[in-house]
Image (cartoon, rainbow, N blue to C red):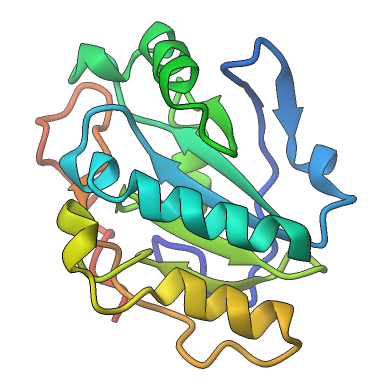
Length: 193
């Protein structure tokens, strides 16, 4: 298997604490028609530069049965700003329309093969992966973005069409792995396309 989930793979199970003081598992979203799991954090300029376009996409597709779930897997030892208390503060400040979960031991990032922040995974009704990669082509400055791959994939999925471009390279900071240099990536992690 490649480092990152292959198209058609089932969504790996997770059970993680969220900033609302509840614990959520994959099974809690069984009643949602579609699921977007994305790996994010608090500090990355590619995340903060594209949060509002991600918000707009989440709000656009919520009425079509699409649930967004964000996961922070970054080591707080690398960036203290990515700690759970700072996740709580960030959600209180911005009130994003998604749940924000904490993957402290990074096991879920490894199961999904998260490469960067942000990195999106779109799952169909059977929870099979139909899209993985970037949200937009310029997440650091989303106002300059010319392509919204996530919007396109969700438009096609919610219209009953096959996803025309199923894999793109995520653009952003690499996941901050515990005990590693801030720029380290697993040896088997590589570009998706």
